[in-house]
Length: 83
Image (cartoon, rainbow, N blue to C red; front, side, top):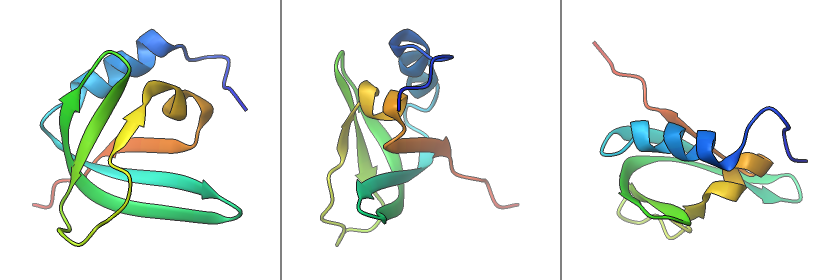
């Protein structure tokens, strides 16, 4: 379901703030399956953005569209810094 309080431009602005920073990504794979990983937001393009996973053995999709965030199938948040 699309959340009405967001739009693509606000999602793009949110992602731009995370560029080059460590992030936590939650991906809804459907049928009660999900994947969580940490990585660094490496690329921002007009239609999508890329995340480089910290785990070298991670074989999941690492390019996501802004619409996937808008629909709620992908969530990106900054990784908490440990003191």
